[in-house]
Picture (tube, rainbow, N blue to C red):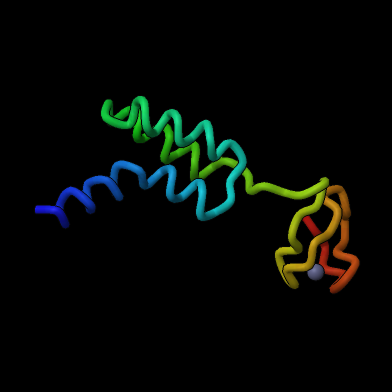
Length: 87
Ligand SMILES: [Zn+2]
């Protein structure tokens, strides 16, 4: 019985878990929507889509190069480490 409750809680807070573990922006707001309106199913779906589509947190205008993973300026056209074009 306890296992079913735990699985239910994990499923209910899946959008929050996704937002937190993928370090998404708005993770706090996603949690609030998930917590307050998750039971309405439509609120759950919205918070899940929001968690999946929201951009990752970047620090000081930096992002990660998709090829080598180094931190580069978000506005950079090429990675300064591996010279891969950014998009
Ligand atoms: Zn790179």
